[in-house]
Amino acid sequence: MAGAESPAGCQAELEPVVSLVDVLEEDEELENEACAVLGGSDSEKCSYSQGSVKRQALYACSTCTPEGEEPAGICLACSYECHESHKLFELYTKRNFRCDCGNSKFKNLECKLFPDKSKVNSCNKYNDNFFGLYCICKRPYPDPEDEVPDEMIQCVVCEDWFHGRHLGAIPPESGDFQEMVCQACMRRCSFLWAYAAQLAVTRISAEDDGPLSNAAGMADQEVIKPENGAPPDNTLKEAVPDHGRDSGQELKAEQDDEPCTSSGSEPDLQTVFKNENIKTEPQSSCRLQELKAKQFVKKDAATYWPLNWRSRLCTCGDCMKMYGELDVLFLTDECDTVLAYENKGKSEQATERRDPLMDTLSSMNRVQQVELICEYNDLKTELKDYLKRFADEGTVVVKREDIQQFFEEFQSKKRRRVDGLQYYCS
Image 1 (cartoon, one colour):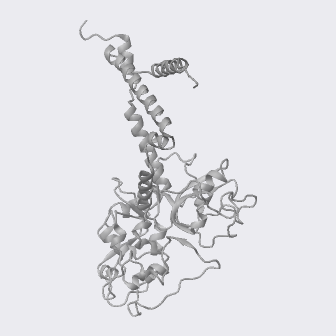
Image 2: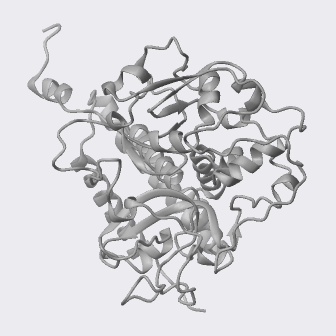
Image 3: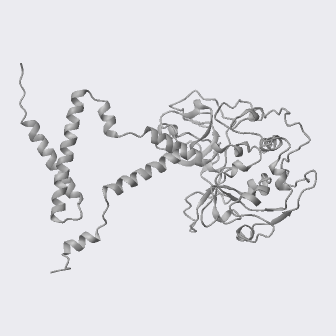
C-alpha cells in the first residue's frame, strides 16, 4: 500500500541515527577542547625544571594540602603520577608558576618525577582557588547549594574566577569579549578606566546608563575631568607616569630570597626595554596621557575587553614603569593571553597528530607491513560487502548487534584461512 510504513520502519525512525562521521567529529572536537585546556603541557615530565612556566595547566591537591594548610599547585604530569587517586581541584591555567609537588608544603609526599626541588617557590602566587573556592562569594564550583545558573569568568589580572552576577557589571549578552578585569583589579589598576572609554566591549562614558551603571546597583560612578598639567593625586594610589623622570633610568626589580628561574615568564624592568616583542614608544608620545586629557568615567565594576585590546596599551617608558610597579607587565605581552595558550596547545597537537595505522606500520618490518596491509584490505572489502546488503534491502539503521555479528563472522573466516595453511620445511 503506497505511503504505508511498517512497524519496523516506524521504530527505525524513532531511533536516533548517528553516523560514523558524527562520532569521529565529536571525538575530534573533544580532543581539541582537551588540547586547548592543557595547552601542550607535558603529561609525563614534571615542569619544575622549566622554572616559572609562562602559562600551564595547574591542579591543587586537597588530599595533600587541605584547607588550613599552605596552598600549593602541581603540574599536569604530577597530577597523573604523584596524585592519581587524590582529590584534585582543576585550576585551568596560571601564569609564571613553578610546580610545588613534593616540596615542604607536602608533609608526607615526595615527587616521583622530580624529587630534588627547593623547599618553596617564592615567586608563585596563590589565592583561594587552590582550596577550591572562587569568586568574592568564596564558594566551590560547581556549588551544590547554588541553584542560580551562572557562568564563571576568569579575571585576566588576578586570575580568580567570578560568577557573572558578582562582577558589578553584567557580561555582554552576546558573549563577544575576549578578557575580563574584575572589580578589585580595576580599582588597583585604575589607569585602565581611561582605556575602557575607548576599548571596552561595553563603552563607558559619563552619559552611560547601561549595564555597568545599573548592574545590581553596585556600580558607583565617578566622572574624571580632563587633566591639565600634572596628574592629580589619585585616591586609589595608582602609579601614574612621571614624565619628569629620565626614561632610561635603571630600575631594579625586588629580589626574593630565592631567584626566579623563568621559562618564558614576564620580563623584569631592567630587560623589558630590550625585549623585541614589547616595543616602547617615544618619550614624547604617551597614549595614556592623551586619553586622560579627555573626560572619562570610573565605576565600581568589572570591565570586558575585545580581542587584541592589549596591543592598544601605551608602552612608553613611563607607562612601562607604572606597569612594573603595579605588577601587570604581562598586560603588554600578547603571548600571555589564555587564547594564545589554547592556540599553542591546538597547534602542537595538530603537529603531533598522526594516522594510527601509519604509526603501526612504521614500527614493523617489511613482511609484517605487507601482512597488515592485506588484512586491512580484507577487512575493508568484507565490511563494504556486508553493509551493501543493508543498502540493497533498504535498511536505514545498522544496529550494534549487526556490527558485532560482522566481526564474529570475519574472525571466523580468518581462523579458517589460517588453519588451512600448510607449512613445509626444507
